[in-house]
Length: 270
Ligand SMILES: NC(=O)c1ccc[n+]([C@@H]2O[C@H](COP(=O)([O-])OP(=O)(O)OC[C@H]3O[C@@H](n4cnc5c(N)ncnc54)[C@H](O)[C@@H]3O)[C@@H](O)[C@H]2O)c1
Image (cartoon, rainbow, N blue to C red):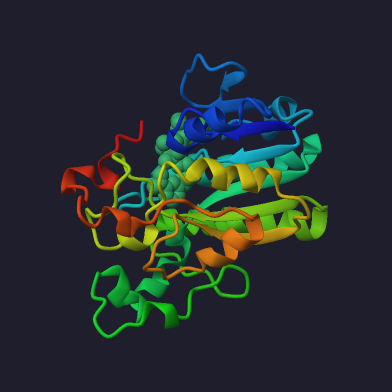
């Protein structure tokens, strides 16, 4: 298949492109320059028409490009072009170019409002006493309202709704992945929430490969993380749907957690 990865120079883009490049014709676009083959330096917010030319012949777009900072001080000034206009352009261009599927990287923060409600609040704060983790009713993807916890998260819900629109009215296939947390040193632990959201670099490649290769997709919302014992979101549904079983579990790192300096927010986005 011809696969176009937006944000290919970023953390997840690089991991996925390296993993699938022997089996698929991988192309990429990014704001940043790269010497990776078939990669074009482009601002996705500039023009949907130009982008449609870049997307010609593409089977699947994996849309990862974004400003992924979700700190409270990140406002629409920062988010409007990379997360709203660029995402609108990607879907419009994909439709115009006849792309079959868009896989969109959303975030668990699109439903972060559930983390204010028990028992989720206790779990993400690391207070496990009295909670039987096998009896927690997990937050679903489809069929449950989004509850964005920041402007960044609301920008992700915008992208999710575009996927649904193009799937329902324009016959495109759409997969939304509410991605957990990718840690710089590949270990959870700097904040208690990461024991729920931890998405290891060993599991990312196979998970996204399955999103690209899965047959019979119309539209769905999946949670992406490793197979962590403490869950809030319905990752088992995603693993079953994708036919992919992660090999990692945050609990395997309890003995050697990350330090505060390893927190995801410390990555220099640019
Ligand atoms: N890394 C995580 O922990 C995490 C968690 C939840 C969701 N996500 C989502 O997953 C996706 C990928 O995350 P990542 O960690 O690889 O991010 P990243 O910041 O490492 O990479 C994003 C890439 O997108 C590019 N980009 C941004 N705006 C662009 C534009 N207008 N035009 C072209 N390229 C542009 C950047 O140059 C960068 O290379 C993002 O959408 C992010 O919101 C990531």
